Image 1: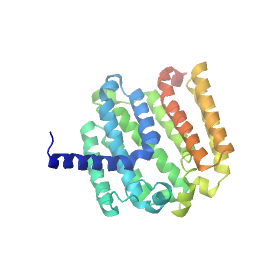
Image 2: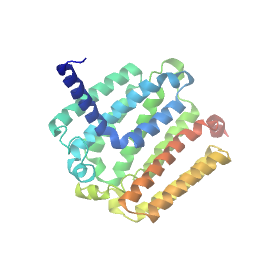
Image 3: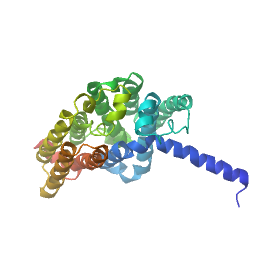
Length: 294
């Protein structure tokens, strides 16, 4: 039987871990899942299954760093859009969250140095500072650029966690996939901003949906269809993968245009996330090296 003191410590520890989880909850499906899928698919053969847990840890700790930084400067928006987050729900104070944010920066760099992926971690740290502390997220153009660079850094780190020696040299197909994925994010990453438009207005952010409410939806439809058509041709996917990618892109894109309530946008965004995960793994399911060299 656990003593009362031990049980109390256990419950406090669980509460602290739950607070950390709440920081990252909204971004588990938008960043952690697609990045984990990409990193596992793109990793050198010897690093695929053996590094799933270290890869997941690396992604989540860096995601936690970004989320604490973001939520320290977006308190008003979170109070309106996501009151369950740790700061608006008063699970942690802003001062303590800021201290955690900078402690996580040191932890991420140390973990990455040990794992052989210091450069992606440093790039992600710089993108995080630019996006949050320097408030480049307040306008849609630099916001999209920072997101694209951040996704690229996440993908690079997740791919090569634990990598050593000649196997760390990127293959042509992986480099092409990295560039394409960054461009996909650059042109479609305002998808989650649609359901958060009210909070973004309150916080003074000029996201694409705030600046261009209708046009931003049309842009998503065109981008999802355009990228899907390009990718099935570029990677040489078969009929099944082509149908899946084109179908997901069309379904999400049409929903974004036809249905504009926050609830509908939330569902459409889930479809977008599935589409993005599919975009991430398609190159590694259809023989990308031959596709790139063709």
